[in-house]
Length: 127
Image (cartoon, rainbow, N blue to C red; front, side):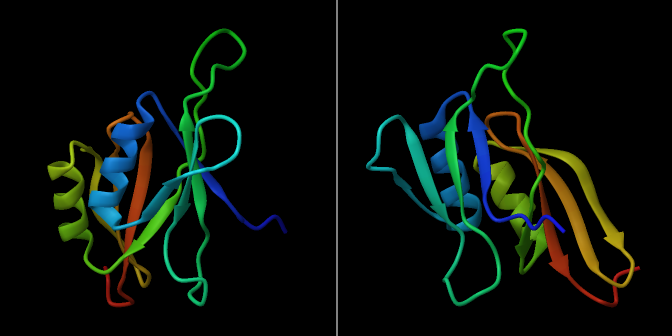
């Protein structure tokens, strides 16, 4: 199996995206000390399950278009509250909250850079 070990968020305006993700999820985001413009994202304590990632200026792919990336889903305590924070930080709803029966509540939003991301509130009673 191939396990997700890192994620990257592509952004037209990286500094704006940093502000957005700090506001919505409280992530620790710091500019990398290495060459190039790259931000390291810490999504939680190393003792908790999950992955960390990075943020960079949207790369241009073959054909001159900005690259699209995987859609990652973030574990949240309250999906409604998280969607509200995303909207307040300049994001938009891509797909309204829905039940994933026996798993929880899922919503998809767009960040300030037009990237889609999911938010999942675990709830085995969701129907």
